[in-house]
Amino acid sequence: MQLSEVAAQQKLACPACGGEAQWHPTKKALICAYCGTESPYEVKDSGEIVEHDLVSALQAIPQSARGWQDQKRAVKCQHCQAISVFSGAQQAKACDFCGSSALVPFEEMGDIIRPESLLPFSVDAPGAREKVRQWYGSRFWAPNNLNRKALTDTLHGVYLPYWTFDAEVSADYTAEGGERYKNNKGETQIRWFSVSGHVQNFFDDTLVCGSKGVHPHLVQAVEPFPTTSEALKPYDPGYLSGWTVERYQLDLVAAAERGRARMLDAIRQLCARDIRADTHRNLQVDPTFERQTFKHVLLPIWLVGYQYGNKDYQVVVNGATGQVAGEYPKSWVKITLAVIAAVIVLFILMSLEGR
Image (cartoon, rainbow, N blue to C red; front, side, top):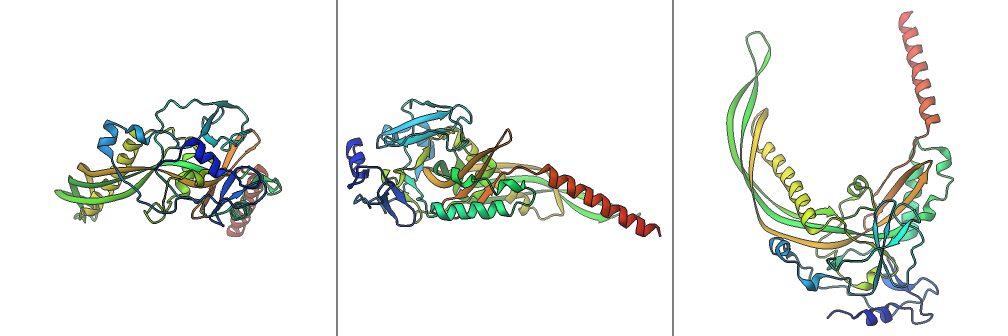
């Protein structure tokens, strides 16, 4: 049974002061951000995580899968183009992804596919801040004043939109295998011969991120997320209460193409490993995709977005595993001193060799 918009808003409000309750990763409960009272609202903790047939979904997305299930507002950042979704009680003063205040209302067109499952935060804000501080402290080439800036004050918890794809992929392949040998002159040459074979693999939860707000290489660096049916929770507004949710900007069609390309790359690697030869060339792969399914899920990250000079930087913490990846400015002073030191050492070594 789906909650109505009114019922959802009433149950997620603090019973003591009427403020908005927020999901607390450590206490596993909804806690009021203003007075600290625990909400009696019980989030859905168990249930079936459904895998949807991809081919059928691409042909006709069901109307029941559209919408957010409770009242939401969306804004679009004119700087980084991220679309953030908030509950009615939240106010967006700056973009969580880049810090820009250039936010404009974004009107949903009705084609949003509601996520049916999510991975709740298990790393809390203090834990994420400590991980970011440790990460900053280990960046040798960063400017010294970077650590003195209160960058972790911009830490935000965000649910990113993800698509997961499953498929049974089998492939016949042909190629030319090569064996190296020495000719009469002792030169290495290659003897080529025809090869063929068959490989197959089941891909489970190939991840494709639908975010535009987080830099793609950072998202990939903190993957994977635990997306098993045991780790994921059925979609419930309670988990999102008080948090920012990014609306996907990579739709199902584009995401399916990207997921298929990743599977194809992996299949080609399997075919290459299957060739029993020193080397190979002209690999041709003929894949067949079966049992294709997908899910739309929300996955948690902690995000620090800041500007240094005229450039934007981000640091990302996986909200489930604590894995950290980030960007940072390089100190030209440190780099210059390192180059001078290297030149001096090289000069000394050359002088010693010349004696």
